[in-house]
Image (cartoon, rainbow, N blue to C red; front, side, top):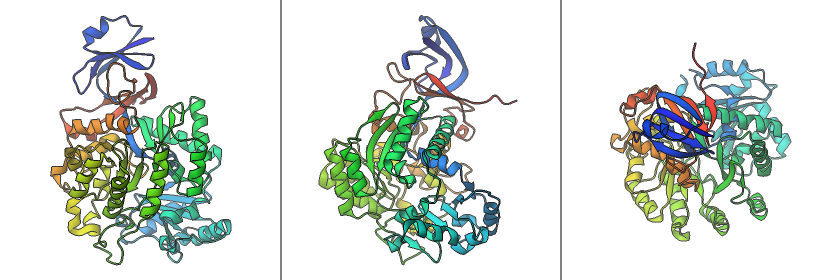
Length: 514
């Protein structure tokens, strides 16, 4: 069936297009389109049309998982947070979204705080970055019984405070419900939220957000794809920390496998932690805690061995690195192994300095960045880094150096709303402008930002030429946007997705307000 969409506003001033068999077959003026043989006409009523957004790095499963948790992100104090968690009737009680800077006490919650929520039911509380989990006494007791021993790396947890970070988080995650039915429900819930916000393609780390075997997660995604229930395009970023399990993944021939819209993509590991949790690996100590420089989750030798194994199977890498030490480590590995023929990327790369960026360019080493981090880190970036903050989040410098750059949100760490991300990239400040712009000369123009949110995601997914444009021959993934004007960046604050299409199929339609 040939369907014509007319009265559209695209960024390159096209008014209409035809979709047939899931692809754009004609794009041009309304007059030209209506002169074609068509079966159906859909009037878009002068709304904006954009290519479907490609969020290059997030966690579909983690998003659905977090949506099942108690949101404490608005609690003004730890006491208020405790009352919010007490209201939950779940077992275990799992909260999410705190930042210590939001609380009037200006400190991180502890095991004792969560013991006030319950002494009989396990309570877990995720920091907004998900790199830290606080647990009550009951949760620690049950996790110890289930695991048989505390985590090996003692640097990653503090029993007295109930604080577990990075690799130690798996000790607690086994308490969470993660059977096939639960995983399936979480994936579908995450997908619905993404489609509502116009996200049609993602790079997604799903193996690393639950404690079950990677194959359990893979098979749930595979099943949903085969049933036609997975509408979203998902490129799995293969995060399997255990070396033996990764060997199993390779031996079973999973690299590059595709199951409908679920595809196996690049290898991933977390090389360090987060800036807010002071676990990002820095070359110098933190300004507000000279006793630590963060830490590497995996040492250089381990990271290099993992990438070498992936290279044998022609896998790209997409490695998490926030701190400049972690970024340096990945650059050195790429310099040693070569990366010109791969589409490798550093996920986050927010503390890459000018010299490191130049070296990334020489290697064709890309970056999957989160402009929303500029906003969420605004309250703490100078506290953590001091003057070094003036050489952080150099995203426009990356573009000027011709580094492949794609936008992402790391959802559920950040809001999936792409217009908020575009606003932070352009204005270098949160959506409500409560902080001054951070290095305004690093602003990314709106048109460039839209490309980073579409065609560059397709580049890293090796689907360039197939996705990322409203163009004859490409797959018809597109969104219809209301309350948005290309000429007025402030309308990024009001823009809303009214319809989302994947291969010409409407997968989301906003309910009409009455």
